[in-house]
Amino acid sequence: MKPGAGREPGTRAITGPQRRGPSEATMRWDGWIQERRASVAAAALCAAATTLAAGCGDDGGAGTASGGDGGANGDGCLDARSHEALFSLVDPAWCAVSVYTTDEEIGFSSVTWGRHGGPMFARSDAEGAVEIVRLTPPVGASGALTAARTKVDAGIPAGAFFGGQALDLPFFDWTAISWTNAFPDTLGELQVVEDGAVAERYEVSGFFSAAAVEGRLLYTGLSPLGEPAAGSSGLYAADRCGSAGQDARLVPEGDASCAAPAAVATWGDNSGAIAADQRGDVFAVLASADGQQEARGFAAGAIARGAGPTDGDVLFTLPGGGMSLAALAPAQGAPGLVVFQPTDPATYEALAPIAVAFGDDGGRVRADGSPAPFVELAKAGTSLSLLTDEANRLWIGGPLPDGGFLFAVAVRR
Image (cartoon, rainbow, N blue to C red; front, side, top):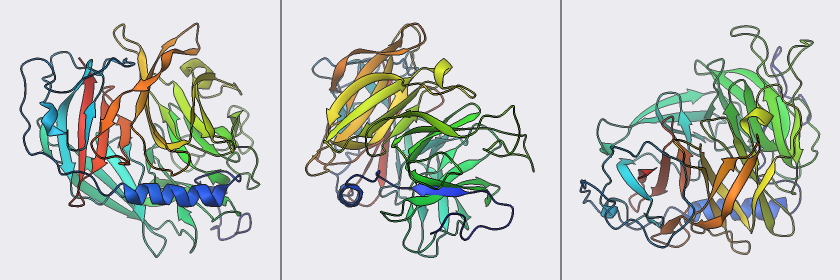
């Protein structure tokens, strides 16, 4: 697709989800698809879910990194059998307090936390439309999630890849989705949806994964919004401009009070996962062609709307890749926690999630120790969905044999 082709009058340039950057992109994209499809086979969910007065049943094991509060005080931990067919928590400082299920086919979609108060994801169809699915938890510590669906006429071109993510932005009541052409043409679009329709479109190259803080969209990709040419792999930002209504946008258009979309930091060769915590800290993991990946943290003050480029702080390096990343903010004297599920560098198979604690050192994000085991998979290779809610709790989701999906809400005791 040529820059600007297919746009309606008055819309702005757009881009989509190139799952990897130019280096080894075809091989890595195929590996990602295989990894997600392989995750559909998981062990059967045990029906028993007993609430304990104290402790976390069989959850726990060898000591690992731990941090984040998660609102566990006063919450009853569930028996580990409620989720042990999918995973177990290695860190004894953590337990599950709620378990929910859904029959929705989530597949390899990226699950995020929605403004409706529950998980959300999106999927595309053969006609280029996108369906955004919002899941609402029931009252209580267990039960089925209720699904609400919105179909959006996104106009994704034939042969292009839908980004697999829908992200509610904390401004303009917008939801962001994306698509990208097949490698080597990494041009695509970021689209923002309002009231069930595409409100704005922006060209961008290699848009992969997004997170948001107040007034700012952040994403991993290959170019700033509005610039179709592929550049360096990195973390990019686009600020809220104008006001709600006809003037709402993500580019300045001559407004000196709004910064133009730009790179925050560039590293690695391939795009990767990104997450923001409740405090506004942002974390991204980008992979290199040599098989290594590097996670960086960006403190809230350095990554907020209007802030300029910054290299951030290295939290860890690991071999391979990875798709799922979540971050819990420091709270009540406990450090923050970054949880990440890496993949095997040779097979792309999902590995057991790890975690690293972090703190704020003079306005910078500092790792507190090295990454350590956090979750043990019941079945090797199972891809999990990791996300956090507005209460700073960790949601761990995974597929069930019948095509359904289990979410367990984990907190620090």
